[in-house]
Image 1 (tube, rainbow, N blue to C red):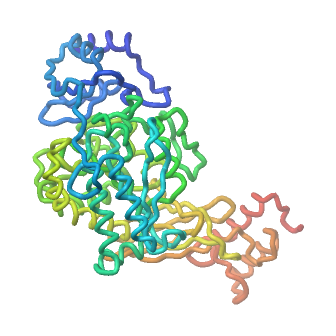
Image 2: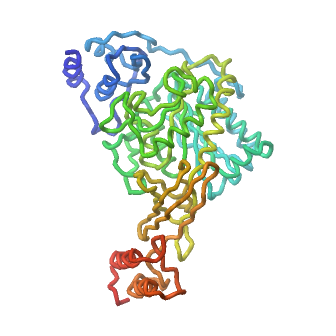
Length: 527
């Protein structure tokens, strides 16, 4: 009866708006915004509430935490929920320091000064960029750390993103601590030096600077940034490589900036920091057909669990979290959200991403920040090192050696990763095992690499030179190329490389070249 009443009242007043650019649970919520708790009969009620536009921000022990407007609070009461008010919607500003330094909550000004000083003091390995401005004109600072910070290199790209919720500031300070560690230990610590020499590391300490100034979860326009990314399959179904539109229009400006930055780079692994719980959760947060409390597994579920454990194992309070086993959980198994960043990163951009909840309290006393850094330092290093497992290589044009933007697909796994079009490098994270890889790109014959053996330490290198079907390298795909394959099948040795699809010359190579010739509209037997 209560559910029927809920649907009758809220569908009439709020409406279901999957056709909107932003999921309705994102907001906007302007004016007073309450934090409250309601007991649920089971986790499936979270999905009902989310579908109706409510923003569930936590779930533990059968109790859901929500952020609501006064109007939404009245609706919940009318729907029969017992409400416990946690926050009255008039937050006090976060106590900050205007003197830059670690171990305190840095204001926007002091954070900016710190980042500018780091870039000036370490010009050989650090660059400071802005991804764009927030609603109120604050920069979304991003620091790039690499041994050659102005160059594209054959190395994986990695990012940490802090405080996309303004009232969860610990992530910002962890990012600043980590930047300080990397820069000051380069050339001193072999471990840190190796990471910087082999990785393009990006740090965004504060994605939501306006929300921090207001001590509110949302941005200045009232949107929850971690509910405002495109939702699969309502806003997109494909990947960037498939030509699927970015879909950044009509979104909060901070979300749009991060989406464009992600699309402009080739990130392999990422994590974003939050507060209010202690765990690492990984995709999917939302998968059609699966509800809150149910595991919505990605094709890389075991891999996601392992890299999440690499973070949690090194963080004793997190590993012993009473909320989930060993401090890690599938996102949907905890509770489902729509419009989250990690699902979009994984599905659309081919970047593995997890959400790290680093503190039970959203804004713990600043005096405890050194303790949080002590708990997370090794975890942040270990998780970053995970970007170097699996297989990697360069994908190039067989004739010219030019880099190719290509898709790399593991057999029996539908989620591809993509090469960096500038260099042609790919980095496919994998657990130890034997895999079959297929590399494909428009205008080229797909190449399959069989029996790729991935070991525990490091990434095995598998370079691929794709053929466009022009076997004899005369500039066109024609009958002469088909003849080259036929000659090889008849035992002719030497000459050009006739294996165009991997695994040695076979009838599949012959068919592939014929298909390419037809695709480029060349009549066999004529030039």
